[in-house]
Length: 192
Length: 385
Image (cartoon, each protein chain N blue to C red):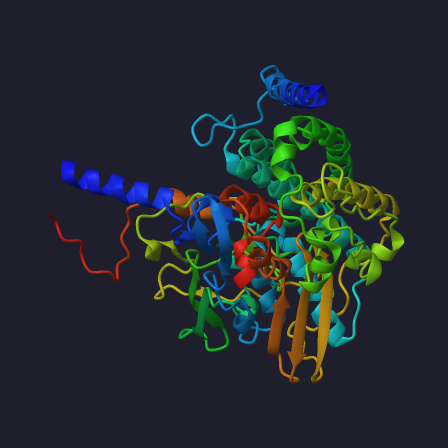
């Protein structure tokens, strides 16, 4: 009987001591610096600028250095990239890109398209905030007007392609687009 | 309205007092099922007669997708098989296809794979032990575990550019070399981790209430664990020293010295929920040991072997087995000589753990079922692929 009582109260003592031990750890966090960040409005720097350079954010294409080799289109396992090329009507020797669409709504940010690119024209930026009201607005058209196609870039031997700094073109693109923009191929929204 | 309430109360009283058996759908949206999975549970009051997991709720046809995309193109899909520890899913697939092609990753790539994998194991185990504590009723440890996981994610993000779906491995190597100064950051984290585990033990592991809830609950004996084909920490929790990293070694693992923690029955019986929990805590320290050795010995050289952009392996079959955070992960790839796999099969640890739940659930309390599910560390998408 006495042993039973001792075991009973010993157990309660164990519970209380280990409980306090755990609580003391929790309480010590009152005195430590918090590591949480108040995203999005109370951050010191734009979060996109604090990310590591390898971060795989929204894809960006610098069509000025695109060779039109379509390696990225072939590498994509889910067909996110759509490229069309044509002959330049004015100069039959020159080929041009008439369409370079990337559906970011479908993209899984795996980075397989970036690897085969010979000039670094297609690259992941550190941007990740591109909220749109319609998922179809997430199709980024890097050749905006098919009537104004972009000629293929011919790499010069021993020289790096003059690629614009990664992220600049996309930031300009994002700033220009409004988030409620409706894709042109959808019917007009009915007014209530 | 008043009358309705009266009937309700009568029904309630009848089910409370009688031995009537009711079938409860535990899940698929229950937070302690760790994903979308349904346990059809026959109960009498608080006592469970039988609980059967309904496997297949999250089936996404990932094995079929493997037959539809090229060999390198399937790599991002492997991330989605087990998103909590995607590095191992990558590695298993890369190993299988490398064997099919008859190539081997360069030594530096193998070391980087081991480092990235062990970092991923630490982050996955933090989720496992944190959610287990939450399921038992202690809410704080999960936030601590997630914080540590975030530090690991920061390191992996710097290495490969993603925090969850890494897609780091390539057939014949890895996609990126370690960036400058990265190994110092990893070592700093490991120093923090080694001391942090002690704090973690003080916070929850040896908490008497927590121990009482887990000790002698859901005991899986050595024989049962082997018979049901359990793998990984669930198997080692029952006292079986089996680890693919040591027993069927692959990659850089033969070069490292590390222990394999097993369940000892410290507070109850060997193979109870607490043993499986503590095996995971100890494995984090072992992972830390492996990463330190790998960083010290990291060889110079290439990170990619020579592989065609769209490899076409000769007709044949290959198996890649890795020790994932949830136990053995096996990839079986059959090639017919084209650039797409003829058949791809994945065998995962969570799926194997599903088999034993029906056996364990006979005659236990409802609250213990939650402890058992948590201690088996299941990730629902891994069960169904």
